[in-house]
Image (cartoon, rainbow, N blue to C red):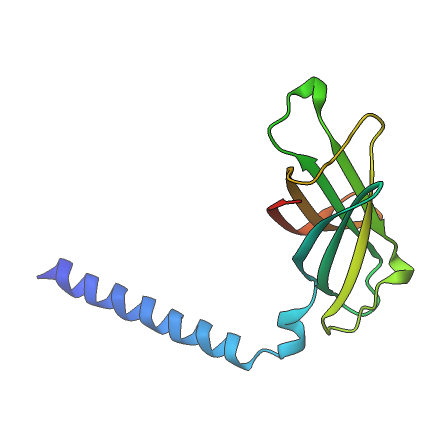
Length: 142
């Protein structure tokens, strides 16, 4: 009998914690829940490299860059094709709202992309101290 009483108390405590957590989430400001998010909208071939359309939101006063990297799938280590692009701090609008930006990606020397290639694209914020966060990835066909 003691174990079932303990189980009921444990279940009651878990339910109370769930209700309190849901209440805290429901009363949190919507702007705070939306900040520092990234979404990859589109990846396209754009000579001489690639371009990635990104929807982002960030906190006011944030001092980070938005970085996009792409790597062609199905290649060996010696035939790797990669591209990268950055949107600098001054070009980002950080006001908690969602904004769209097109990130042009430059290819590395020896890299090449063509119509029909499949690429893995990663976008993230990068700060002055070398930390990255809000990472999003997708695989897309060109």
